[in-house]
Amino acid sequence: MRGKRAYHYVIDRFGRVHRIVAESDAANHAGNSVWADSRWLYLDLNASFLGVAFEASMQTGQPPLTQAQIHAARVLTEMLRSKYNLAAENCVTHAQVSVNPENMHIGWHADWGKDFPFREIGLPENYEQPLPSLYLFGFVYDPVYRSVTGPAIWRSLAASEKLVEGAADQRRMAAGEYRALLRKRYRDLAAALKQRNADDEN
Image (cartoon, rainbow, N blue to C red):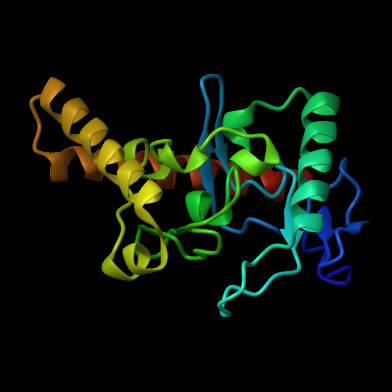
């Protein structure tokens, strides 16, 4: 993980917190990703969000996280939120932000698409937030995404679709036509961000 600069923090099975990348630096934790809050729109969250990973297995019948990990995550979350004035609604999982720009589907990575212990960590049930990738940029989801996520995210998918349909109705457009405009917006912003990053490197 250090070699790949994969996360800012990793919480192991014993609840020990390991710093992998300094908080002031970007880590490679989000890949192609989208989020938004009441003030900002975020593309490619590596540079703008802190990434925290857990040593966990989602493939067994056991709970994926230990109580020690949940306690450590709560303390770490409280510390980071206090230090950086982070909004609770911006504490989200990979499944909520990951996108695939090639096919305009969400959930390129769908880890923690269900059962993340938001409340135990001291956060609201953030699964239920509408997904900005859908209602701001016209991404869609497929049956595979639904099969690996849970009911809370399904409710957010339905809320996102309603936002798209309502915005399309206001503009007297078909939902598909409006979604095409949103996708162009995403591609234009992503291209501008890529160009800016290239300019910064030169």
